[in-house]
Image (tube, rainbow, N blue to C red):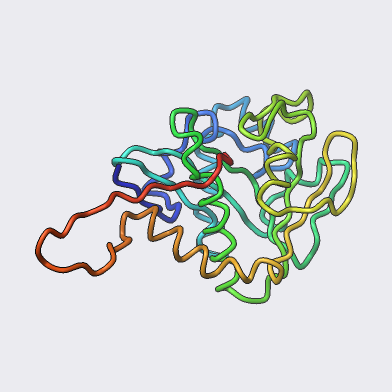
Length: 230
């Protein structure tokens, strides 16, 4: 399978699932969100938000593709761009952190390691920017397992499973029975650099086989052996 990662831009925003493409839970405060939904303008607001973050801060997400088809995505941004986060009982997000807004691997691609790959790529991006100490996220402790997004009564399906966040290195920063705020210290994952480079090569199909004699040379297909995450 041919796999690749692309920065989220206005050109590939439509590759997100319709439910995410028209969701502005994180992007708008409650009043503006309701107004946009009532007017049927949620998708326009989503596009405006992505454009604003791109201009003011830079890339705010990645989209994964398998054989040219969208397979998953991750969104993240500084808390100043994410007013919806203020609704959580464990808010606010740390001033030194970027908020992991959401991430998802489509069900047909679950178990291929794409979820962890997307997370590693987000961390690598933040490490390269500098001046960012952590990635934070709100978790949902009621999600049935780390591969399923539970539908919460307050926030729909906009919240990541707490078990998934724990599985990719987050620790609880502020406890809550349902919506803990969780944190991943970037300095603690600086050792991911080599792992990320290797994983990205696998993801992009760019791993070169070991040098062998020209006669009888064979090619071995390398598979992503990471556990499921998305």
